[in-house]
Image 1: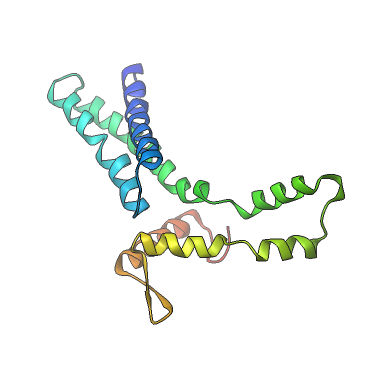
Image 2: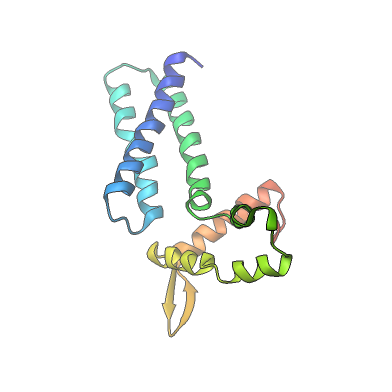
Length: 166
């Protein structure tokens, strides 16, 4: 891999990340996963096509740049939902740090975390992204949600992770 390919692939990802930060910071974003996809997989496509069209990069370089950019964007898109929310393990660490040397018992930790809105905000996000819908007070998976769940199931199976673990 040449330095040009490396820097351009990283640059396309940085371009998408900059757009992402600006849109999230200054826009009222609904359907976050849709816009994340547009920003990270759609927007960098235009500069990539320009590079190839103006002969700044040949076909092999363009392909290599695209592979690097897509690999970085895919890794970020997979971690974004986790980074966006407070991870339960980190929530416990922050809670224990707050209480310092006094600490908390297991029962106290469970009691405090039971009041956490982690799952409620997750349901709101799924509903905003049209991955679930509420009908008569019950949540149902949408077609898009079923496709996404199926893709994750296949991905986890390919990694050898059994259902309900990891």
